[in-house]
Image 1 (cartoon, one colour):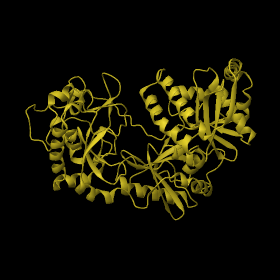
Image 2 (cartoon, rainbow, N blue to C red):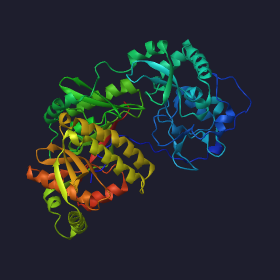
Image 3 (tube, one colour):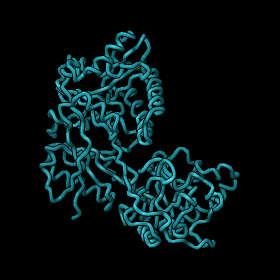
Image 4 (cartoon, rainbow, N blue to C red):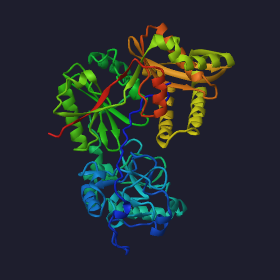
Length: 516
């Protein structure tokens, strides 16, 4: 039932309350630009790639410096599209003529930028891109293969153009601008062809990349994190699924997780395109009020005044320990908690449809279950891809499709490293073929948390059978409750979870600090 597991990404929803044609018109005559341009304007107007994005919080959104924000506002872009006036990525708007999102300065009808003459450096660069290498240690200049014009250009022309831009970028004035706004340099993209490294920028920026006390979250950290969670006295019947190492580690291929320890307290951080945030409150025996304040001091140092600085998954009991006048609290979608006995039995009229589906699949197929072993890996990954493809062909929105793509990496991580992570899995066979798998972990001594669950949609009733079987196995090992995680804001998943009649939906909170 918990098909996608937990997902930590935070999605921005920009309000589109003005018409792009309200933007001030700009002179169409050529003007002097900070950077030379290779792609002719006529090619840009015909293109359907630039300025368009598949998701609202795309890491490819253009970044505006403080001065560039002021210029954009002067030319008609509303201030509300810039969450941090000292420098930020622009908030996107829904495309008025199709799927996806567009920059608020983009006129979808004409295909032109409404602030072209004052567009930011980030946009002037394209189709070149500044990015860190895969290790995060070196600044590179490359060209984006998503640009159709560049794919047709001779390599020598691209190289000459890129060298000219590189020389400009390493001039003193632009180096200072980029150093002041390091988020102009994006993360590594494997579809960007590297042209050359930029050693001068690397020398200036590498020492500022991250606090040296931060270290990557590794699977070997699992036992220590379990110990820290126990010491923080957060384990109870209403503990959210996020208070467990596997919940976070499974997403490390998508988010850069780092942690540090200060006076026996662990601080777990994740990097978003807009800066660092905490997916979990500080863990340790210290006073929560003090350690939360420390955490926000660290994020202020790294992020500046960016609104990305936040702490997620704060429990109700923890919320009561924090001064209401110092923090803002936003309620999150909560975890669904169930009685394991009720789900193992599926008795009574409330569960009539689920029980009927279990009976149907048992009647039509021979089903067996066995503990997950490494030799199941390839069959399970093939099953995931079939399952995801069937879901994509159904009634699923763009966000749901993106979650499926992200989830494949998370599933692969669990299948590969389940034992070290502290999770265990079960594989179900239908007529001798692998047709379902599920993984979970003990959140508390009496609460089993379902981390992943996939069942072949070609066998009606199999998903319900697997969920019931999971509950029966958990109950036989002492479980009283089942935590099926949140619904990720997906209406279909919410309806399914509610149909199983949760005993409670656990509130958690995201907190931000009121400016001092």
